[in-house]
Length: 433
Image (cartoon, rainbow, N blue to C red; front, side, top):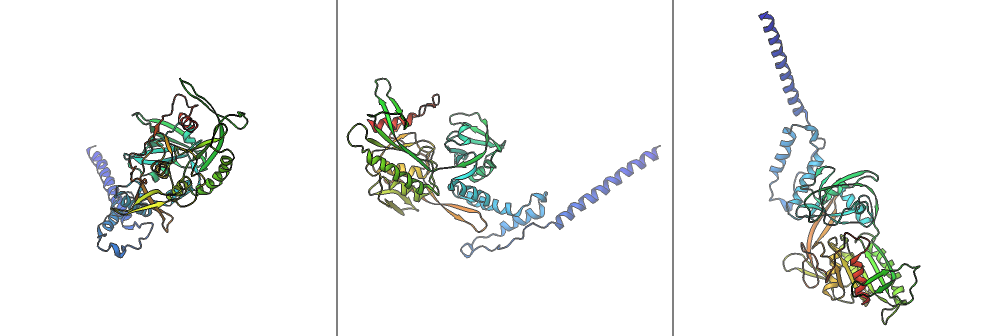
């Protein structure tokens, strides 16, 4: 009996040893036979970087290829993208970024005005992915996403350490699909899961109107009603309104078409005198995340006869003034500008230009505070490289970065009564009075 037991134990030991032997040798064989899916070319750095020792980089690369246990995860293209992303992140500037091909395509689609997603402009603040502004009528806005919301998770995955482009890539997707964002609203600590169904987002940069205003002054609260075309009021004054939602590929074209139309209506109803005249123009830059610098200068030039629109600082004591570039049609009309915490970048340039040239009254809330300019380059593989090339300052030298523009008249929206746009009503009141 003892001999039989001993034989069983020996058989088990031999089986274990054989399994171990073949297992180890199979792993060794896998390692020896592993070849990366892409060959590595152009290892040599350009001459300008000839004093940089890249040997450690390639040593790490080859060590990962030879020693990392899960060969299925060794994707040379992803490794290269990760290395370049790390290179840009080492500068500590959230707006200097490398966009792999898909992310670069997403960025271009946004500026072109059409993409599939939730319709929210994203940014980085305090090392968190935040919502700069949800687009009007977008799935994000309808789901309750608000400017300054922090996105802490996307579909249950933490956004810690993500760049804007990474967040955009994960949040965008085919029309009709669902994405779950874990949001922390401003001045709160607890996160809230919000389900959003993606849709085709078409962003029209510019829209506007000229409408009659029924205004009744009161000691308690002034009553303001913006009338529709079919509502008659012979003695009511008029106000012009332009909403500018972004500075994208079609902005200047859309702006020119609308302003030409509105200017004809304004000329027929001059603001001089009383009664039916157009009292002024409201330029609504709320939740405008920005875009092209050239567009900002173009828009600012619509309202200024001469002078500076913005100052670029391309290093220490190297400043460049960007002046009015054309003859505008709205240089004499009374102007009020609406801003909020979702107004960023190019929209802050326009608002800052009007403020410093004493051209407009700013109403609303303090803007986002993005005071840098990026140059976007397309790379041969379809990727993009965005590099911060300058600061921008208002004409009087104010750098808004991180602090934003403070309005002349601060007005907050009443979340309990969304039917009344208190900021717009205040702008109307300012023009009429």
